[in-house]
Length: 184
Length: 352
Image (cartoon, each protein chain N blue to C red):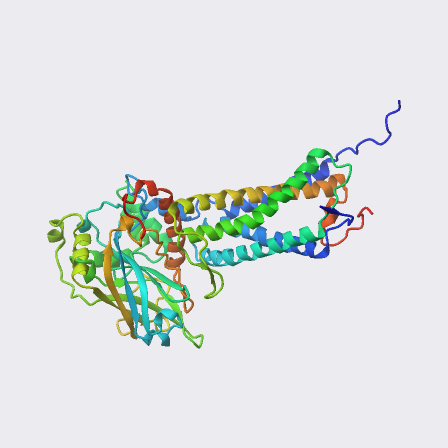
């Protein structure tokens, strides 16, 4: 679904940048917490859980906004492989943003851990206790997190490629502020 | 035919360098955070690996306190704890408990008489789903003062260097206090006769928001009977498990939960240092162990007795161990649950 707009709608851009900060923080917190036994381990875990749920909620809102507003059309002269990669990556981003928090939540449920957010607020268990499911989900969470970060690196590269090399207006569709050379 | 004058713009090297630099810096920052560039960082992986005996870990079992037996029971709060903590578990009433008596060994097949330190893991749940988990031992103090010291102890114990222990004690003289207890402290013939101590300090937060740094102990109602290690060695390899099973079948066993409140200046960050005897104590309730179940199919098997699973009203203190234990226990849990096939449930067993 596309729109005649040349930029994503303002709420979409706001959510994109907010979630960019959240998700990058989340990935760094995740790999950081599992590699330390220092007191900051607990602080990181205590941020990781509620931040994950916040990302899940934001991702669902963002999906609804995407369905409502659509997305600006890609430039007509964009080579087909790049066009395919651009479209595919969006599906993968949405899938990861929604699946990762759910897998984390399910993984804790399968391990009989209470899923504590803030203070005494906690979420219900969404899976029965099961070592087999826990193992599957834990590994999936781990490898998808690494893949997620790899995808973000490619996204950085693609963004800069469009801005610095092609200067084709794709960067500007999501730019937080308009840059002077936006084609129009 | 003339070629179109519009030819693709030549790609300048500058932007490519910028792109490579941005991606490279991000990747390096990620790798650093993950510890991949810091071989000396004490990670849960290293700490847990150091626990393994020479023949490797007992697959499917906890990486430490590997041998144990499950129980169920109740905690009956007398209401006195509410003055110190707003946690629902201290409101007068009865709350279900799942627990585990265990031995501080990485060998799930260790003979009971060979293991100096015995432990108790408990999970108390209150209506509304809040939970308090704890793992305690019968030693009055912890062997060392810091998680790094514990790693050094494990490394020295496993070392083939004849001077390893001497060097370790030189760097961690506090270990000698623990050795003193290990050599002279009384042994008993029953899990039911042991006192189990949190050792680590935690913070109780009361209804007005006031924080009290505390430790706690489960003190047995059963009278401890001292037995020499030589006498215990003559008993079977699983005498503790057999004894507690018979004892609880004959009648429930009780412990008082006693909270000790620190005075300002007490060593709250060091579980190797006992607090003075005259500190204020509060008896907040009674643990009753009602039924013993073998671990293989028992209700404690899949529980990680992570001491940082705490209800609101209890939080961690400046003691660095609960965080390190939580990180290591999680690693141990992930390993052992992935090895469940090495510790199969019985064909007819499993959860009711």
